[in-house]
Image 1 (spheres, rainbow over the protein chains, first blue to last red):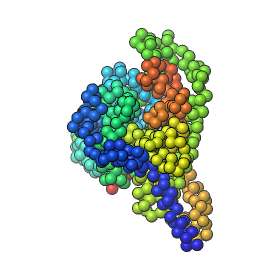
Image 2: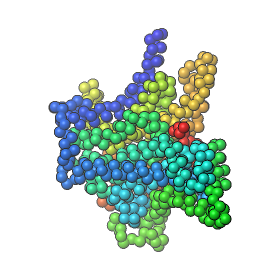
Image 3: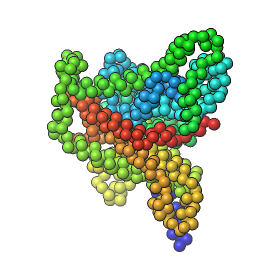
Image 4: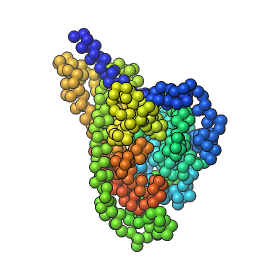
Length: 281
Length: 338
């Protein structure tokens, strides 16, 4: 009886541990592979080595490709452009939708709501032509703008929700004292919703940093516009004998900011990812 | 809700600064109010126009045209004279049409049942049942597949399924005499496609179910226990009925997500192995119109495949909004502000 009871208590843990095993194995292999000459399964073959990290000094995968720093800079540029733009534009629109009365407010609200549920990936073919017409195809700005656009409905709704929860009194006092709407927004309301903006910023940064499909679709191969994901994917497919050590080392390098967020902002991640996930799976 | 109403009332009576100069000119105040609203709204409106409205229109027009790489630059696809419904009849006459359709149904239903709904519910029940901190830890681990860049995530899976002696699974299977050591992904592509997508997708339902379960008043669960109900009976008769709305929401929302998702399949199998073994509807559209591998890009025909998904997407989105009071649900994860 006690054994049965003990098993009953342990059972959930056993199931849960098994359920996270695959991703754990994946990460374990990534680590091992980056630091060993070769791997068989999860075992390193040969010596442990740091040679795979030579990409930090010289271009991996041949000199015809851009250096890792160029690619990292591109990725960082896209991710931070996305973060700043998504947060600012959503905060502007969210404030207006929460506080101002203007014609088209109601329709705009229901529209963003519909767009939030709408699977935006289905529009990639149309966007291809929009980007070409704007001359933004195969540019970092184009990729960044598309990703910002896709994030808009979610960002606006999130921000409007935050503004709705901020008391009206401080703002009213400031307006009576003669402040403009823009001043009120920037100096009084934004500081009170900092945690919300941080959550949206975090979400935007990670999705910009990780993105593959949109950069891959709207730029050409692993050229000067490549992001880390595109770069990494390129070298798994093109070269005949894939240099797995180097590929995993670059992968580990790409994971650094994600890992930092994962370790230090756990609560924020769990709350934002339920509302934020869309498009993908 | 009351907060929203307050905000709306505040908005309905515009609060103009009590500056005397402005009081004099009612038109000036009105104009200023309009301009302010416009200043706040225009960046978002511009982005939504550029990346939602115009693409939808372009997509529809393209789907009526026969634009492909051969006639790109010569065909005036935007002229109604060059429009027809040929692409749509072509879809249904496609030699592999039934294959794409059954692939899509199989992929969506199986992944949804086993992972996006099934695993999500089971893991939510388990992690709320055990110690709080441990539960939090496991939920966080379940978030990892979604947080990992898709390229790296798929790279891990390819290695897990790879042939001996490199593959991780084969490292354990071969010594046990299970399997020949061949590439497991080639042998069971669907198994991995569903698993790989499901592990990402499940975290959505997991977080929503968890907060719904944690919101159930403790008294209900205690009462059920006092009455002698087993754990399974409590789940069946107390917990499940109380979270039926979140369940319905997750199921419908994830159906649409799965129907239109293809990034992981594209990375994992590319729709193969062989001829369209794991090619789903959304991937078909992408391959036709945006994949440069074939060299023969068919924007018009691909757009027709995408348009059908767009129509389903818009219809579903409108229905969700009506049924679920969607705004309450998309904000479910509360990020406390005060």
